[in-house]
Length: 490
Image (cartoon, rainbow, N blue to C red; front, side, top):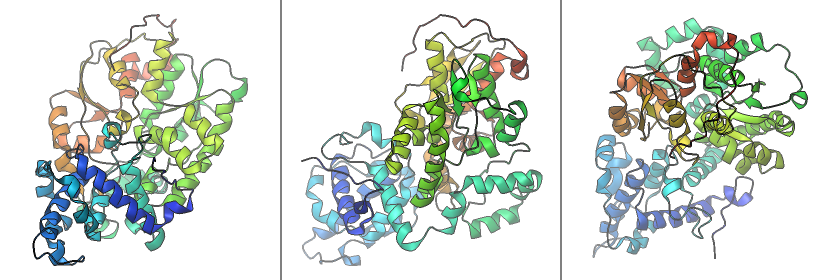
């Protein structure tokens, strides 16, 4: 009989005893499979912990219980922070012929090890597309959502940590930072301030942080779109831009590029004031806040969808939330409708091109580009649409870097995981360095790449905007879109 997983709207979801049973069930399946041993730190740590514990509990004189002699000390080294050993020894989580016989060891896995497995999962979700037991398989293994459930129950019982309350509310941080951007940006560059930030809210003193914009995206948009028309009365293609917190407070030029590129192809763009998608709050277990924000956004977006608008989003994590998580946490018809109408920005541009509705009157060569594929874009299973769009630009030579940045927004900023994040991102950074122009759809991965390569990183839409002529684009009339319909390989 297939396992039925509870959702956050069910009382069973919040039952801690049921959570423990589910964790042991999933851990046993993952331990027997081990296909994900090299995807993130969480899996190798789990497998190493079980292997070490298995030796103790199967010894002739192994005591019963959950004390040190029953295996806790065998895994304590990595539980308490030997990040380098864990990062460089992923293959130590070796396949074993008898892993399915380790069920007794799994039952004795100490709570400290379980907590560490949860902490080391940074929600890249790369295990989803390769897991052979994902729903609708009867085993119904959903490791990332199980980790979020653990954090949610812990937060309900013990409260949301200050670190997660601050990092989980990018709108609040952005609103404060953009009030006095010069002061805020200068303040984060002062070493003493960074040391204080590390001690109070746990942001590592050496992590590159986003800068606050002098003018927010909404302020720029309102200047050129003062009286938005009734969307129901607008003919033709029309979209709502879910512009994301990063675009609003830190990278408004990305939103500008998206608006002007879309409008150049005759698409009407709406950009009502929206809240955070909620993923940063979920990372800290704050389900009530994430759900409230999602509900507010759905209430704003649903009438646009009913009026025939699509929703486009330049942020992979946010577009993933719109498509998949909001309907999980809200369970409403409106959230389902929003999900069905949502597109990643590059996915939408590719759709326009396939329909012969994208103007491709580029004027500027772009050259060699190293393009980083974000994990939350990859798991949407839409193909490599950003790469496909970049390849069509004049003079483009695009190198696809399909490796994780290991940021997960807030995870890679925390003092506990900063070094581990950089170590696991090393293969991606090595692959990105050679290209003269670097690009990623993820504006959080951008921080990791810029810090690790000392090169600026552009969103793909910025490069496309530049290929159209940049600042001159808004003044140009779009020609008839070409009918070249060849597809790109996925």
